[in-house]
Length: 418
Image (cartoon, rainbow, N blue to C red):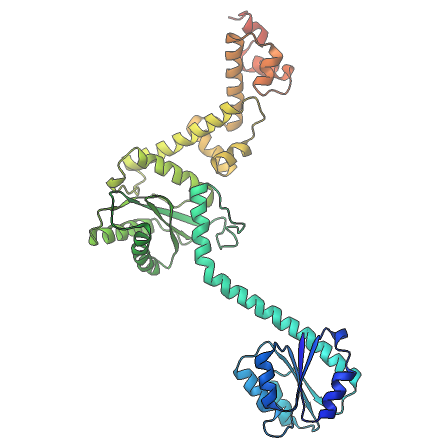
């Protein structure tokens, strides 16, 4: 830390430089000046953190120097004023200029040392505040880019690479989302950057009216996403209809037949459902023509029902695939939920709605059905089959098998059952 002493009395300057234990109070460099003109040169040449300044000096006073210092934003410099006169007008001026202390000469060196310690602490406090403010300004400047990359990673890689969490970006657990997807079909003279720029211009106009937040990005080649989010209390089904119509009219107006408004989610969803909705949505579109400009708004429409059916069918198929590949291992609902990127309770509700049974019952049923297959078609022992189907012990396997089918695995293997 550096200090600048400004005083027109050389003897005072020399005594201060020698009598104050500078290193002990964390001040490494002591600069001196006998007038304001030379002091200006110093502060413009070296990093100065604390200034100890006399008020009464020939030419420009210490007060005038501090005014210049403030005007030129040499902050967060901490200033201490020295004076031989107990004049309240000086003190008032000093307060208006942010002076830390107003000290009457002569001042004992021990007392001045304590004041300087206080100045060191004050500088550190101001410096931290300035850094925090700079960090905040930098964060606000780059936040839109961080949000865009967060969602781009999320939709293209299934999970963001960034260490920043959704909560830090302002996404609450109950935030409501709606996703709109555009597709670049025919070869075009427009590159991805051109398309994003055009869509961004329209998005800015549309969402400023809605007072809703959004982000626009391209997670995969030829596809462009507009993701909007809002609090649960703000979501309104009419918003989705409005968004679709505005973007559709925009593309029609520009005669942009090489970009297609492929589709829009037919309802708001939460964070746990986003990835599944996107995956199911794209699977649906790949089986259709992306150029159709499908808009899924009417929950009772044939198209909406078809989408819901295909979405849940893909989910059940993914779960069945996972279970079949892990029958010899322990399988928990959490494992499956992580695999399909859904909340455990939401997953169980959808699965039971589609199959009529819980996940736990389904896993048990699959283990036992596979066990019957092995009993019927292999020469494996009861113990080996128990291990192959994920049961902890042969006795647990046998009791579960008997409870389910009414006969023991040995009876089934030897065909001693009705």
